[in-house]
Length: 321
Image 1 (tube, helix red, strand yellow):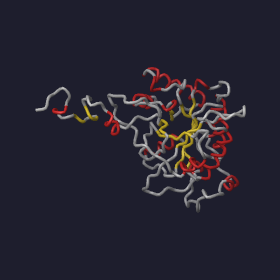
Image 2 (image 1 turned 45 degrees about the vertical axis):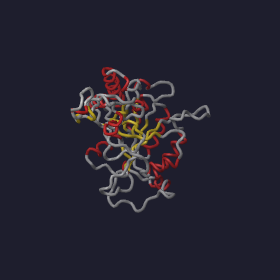
Image 3 (image 1 turned 90 degrees about the vertical axis):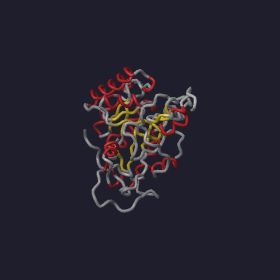
Image 4 (image 1 turned 120 degrees about the vertical axis):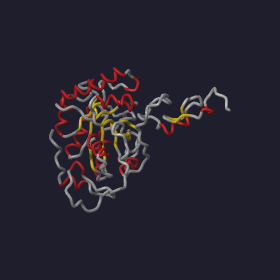
């Protein structure tokens, strides 16, 4: 796999205008995939992981809200370039999380859509030496208006990380365990046949996951996985349930700039011990943390929290002494 080409001097000058311009360059050389200013040591900062679905608009009508047009993405691309953050793939970011060396100024750009417009958007980043990750649903390859195997192979050659997003695109937390395994492994094998490399990162389709699905993804050989969460990532994030921010067609530019500046909410670490109660359906790709769910446990529950037993006098059906 060839690495992205370095950014030319002319391209750098194009995006050094405006208030987002930073000061002097680093004294030590930095790979063009991680361009940007160094973070403050010892001060964990939120990291935006942007989630795009780029769709062409040949009819002149506004696409559905969850997508952005190529023109909108081109405008966002210029904004994120001016942010001078360190562009990383999902796998690179998770490797940094595990080593406790995740840069404070990291930025991860991901694409969940399988439309042909995704190829153009991801190629624009790769040709400027900027890292990106494209998650592919393999059953849609070659369909009308969708990515083709040749385009996926070309993005891989340009240095774009090709990740898996299941074979059919169904929510995995709604499937039987055997079907989840089939979705995960079939997608992985087909992408390996297309690119020549097994994908290392995974995106839960439509953000649907639970502890069982997470464990099956790990068992299948993936090293990273993305949920949704609609929050900024942080050094304590789970590498197999990364929180991402969806950039949709109705999002104002100032909100994107705020995310690039690390302004926004974060979530606590999402990995929790398995609970014997499923409290609410998973709607945003993350379970309610156990420490918050205690307040919602029924009064007849035999345990107030995992590993915490109620006194004998408080157990239902036993009279107090």
